[in-house]
Length: 286
Image 1 (cartoon, rainbow, N blue to C red):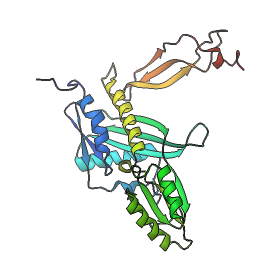
Image 2: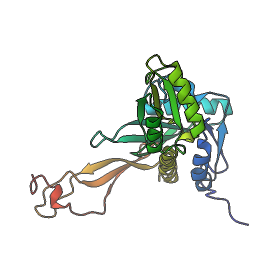
Image 3: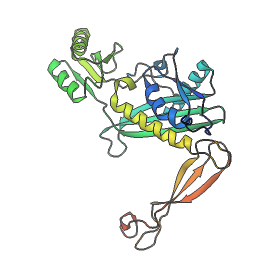
Image 4: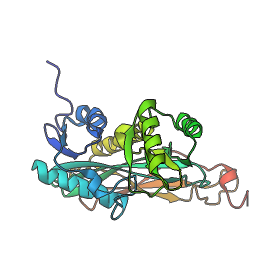
């Protein structure tokens, strides 16, 4: 008989509550169940859009992490479990030039067994576009550029903040009907089209959620040498790697600080690199 996966892990054989209504359980279970020997359990009975929606009709309260924590705790309460997962996304401009659409995904584990939280993160370019038009041909061009119908769309009349919203459009026939209806309702004859950013409607986002889950998995598999809690991971990078030419300290990292989320253990681990490229040196390359 094949041995059970990771029988020594604290989460082996345990259920982990996941409050979701957008199909995230398939992504998270595929990454975490086999690696940890756990079972990610989908929890229903609560409309997660009440905690904030990408269509802006319900604003999210608090930070991305606070919103994820709130979801996880609600799921744990409904399921009666001491372990909970939540996934929360954020969209905006890229952090480099501020020009490209960007998606940051967080998968948070709340662990009442150890009194800890562990966060998995991933970020990258995404599809996140809007168009205001009264021309069906232009709407078709926008939809094609947006990756429709694989990436679903949202339609509303008149302007981007109109409260009348049709979500989850995933076929050309449905999009054309919704566009015509919204244009007839609009007092200015215009229709706002945008990406539906919910996980089940956005394949690019699902890829980043998976990467965030993989980051969480790696952290949970790393256990504290002192107390055994999951999540023993680098929390800080220390600059000062010496320049290969002049030996001056640079802003390149020379070491990482590892820390446990549960106990006081911290250690500094030197990185493999012994010298920095002179191009990163403020003295050699001011």
